[in-house]
Length: 280
Image: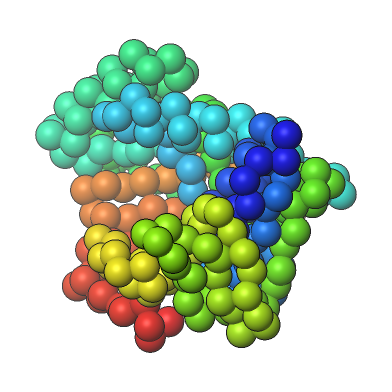
């Protein structure tokens, strides 16, 4: 079957995945439009540090993350992997956080994903940059890791394209066309595209797209503090992009990831910095 005519707005990691998934199910009358170039469109997928943790109190969210991990592990672009499965390590610096890690271990075990509670010494063995005197223990999920988002987008674009999906770069959506209570297509700066179904996968620009059909999307883009260090002496000589587990220190709102001989450090403890979609 060809399926209905579908226009997907946004060719980032969500839009590319949707095009791949529905085309695999036989829907090939699909066009994906994005205002940026492909595969690095310029949105969140082009800049995100790529951390994928599967532990969640929701079984549905855990299963979605597990599916993502399994899928990305199966993808590559000309031999370059789309996922670096280095594992994920959460550490506790307080008794309360250690109790929470035991609870999280229960969730993920119930949802069928391997995990292990570690002593402080075992945490240091897994991630030698951790200070033994600062932590009480940790939770390790070996199948967590780093998504190479732009590569994953490219791999899924290639698969969907082979099935007949069209991807149109540098097509800015100006309006969603409507008639008789339904959508009829989209208007881009390069012309109109007819559609029976329009899907918003615009990410941080989602509220702007939603307004085109009179909807209020309850999503607020927020600026986020992410820094890449210079060379770290303890990592000098590291030739692989990532060898240590991605590290979360939730008591301080911090996460860390390898990038060869440097580290990426993200921090959520700063003041909220909301941004309107129209200003991005």
